[in-house]
Image (cartoon, rainbow, N blue to C red; front, side, top):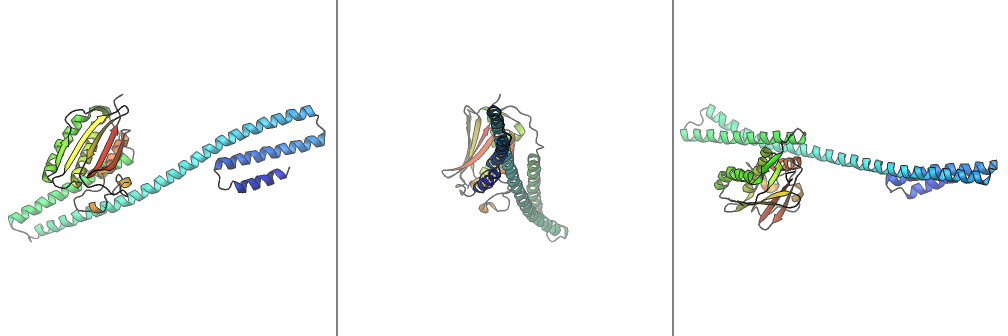
Length: 320
């Protein structure tokens, strides 16, 4: 009878690298076999007749099989829970790293315009600048920096709603073509100032199940991002359609492509890439907001390199 636990210890050494399922099954098997060995020893000492011994073996065998099945099931549950806990810890670490990066980026993006605005305000207050043209230029630059900081605060508020789970969508049937048309019209002055052409299909747009304000924010963020990184005389193209599973639209720019090492991080909070760390390039929150809003719609967004640039593809549910 003592030999069974010894064999169990030996088996445990061989299963040291195995999953928790096998360890639980081994524990159950050792317990069952130990009980069975004890029953056999007692039966031999008590001279139990063969029929009763067979019945006893059948009962113990069935109980052992049931115990192993339950142990296997519980082991799989525990293994899944352990994997979920490990994934949750990894996600928490990643979220904490993103929060630290976000604080660093926002601090940098706020410090620079605030320092400039303070310098210009002090110059105006101390009458260092008195000629009307320079005063007007200082006022204009203060307004521009104020608008940029207001946009950054709006992005932070939107991102906080997404990450906190406070975003509530009012889903309805929305014409994707109308949203695209409005977003292109809104972005046209920015594109014209940078001498970037905006091209969007005039027909063939599907109807989607979405919240129109959030969908407009998705399209607007993607268009502004594409315009920002497309050189002068480049083209930003918007196309779309539907398949059996979902509707989709794509924004293709002429940025020259994204390094393969950066592609998985494009939608991370505050990630802009080394080449994008320039004043006025935004807080690095636009694409993170896009991913959050798309996922809130139960859709998906992806980016890939194409000839001469990159393409962002958004897939959205069809109306039910």
